[in-house]
Length: 269
Image 1 (cartoon, rainbow, N blue to C red):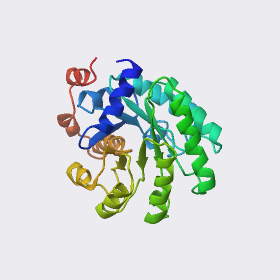
Image 2 (cartoon, rainbow, N blue to C red; image 1 turned 90 degrees about the horizontal axis):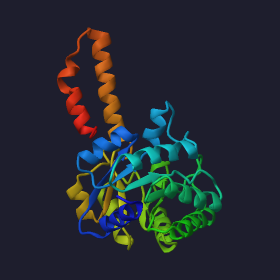
Image 3 (cartoon, one colour; image 1 turned 135 degrees about the vertical axis):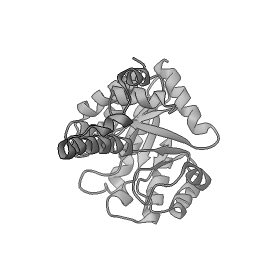
């Protein structure tokens, strides 16, 4: 599928009735598996991508993030959005350049957050960054779905009113999708969705703060992303298998894994 067609498909998913789930991949193989499992769109995950490189979330360079984006988008025939962190720079021009490069890497969407690595950007700095990203997205030859993220609840600032105010400002600036990871309960989700006119992305993957698709759809959510949760599930299985071998000298985990032919089929190889 051509990039422009993927972009149009991604836009249609946000305009269709109901909610949809976007699977977060971390390499070409996981992208093939998730697309083969029926996910209608994928996204990268900064935390998962950093984990693959043996680092903590937030320690990726822009080139490394775009390398992952290129691998994921080229491995599957579904739309792919990118976790672009803060745009890999504090200035509006740097956020705009990241959007342009993301499109070159095959992405048809991406998110820019209001966290600078140590604190939230003040609004007089956060808003121009989103405005510049929007302008860069609109200059592309296809519709690049831009997501603006407010990081309050992930960064120890559980202020719902400020979160809503920031998202509303990002919406007025032209962002296509709004996102506030870490909302504590469904009532907060309902309040955020009711305050916005554009689609809201809920991030599942936090214990005690992840709700069913049906519950989130009823609350007004359009898109549900999975963050690092699938990567963490894969690493949990790896850890359990390794402990079994090391601690017990047994290989019972093999009874619960795909055989090589089945794995090849799942990877479409």
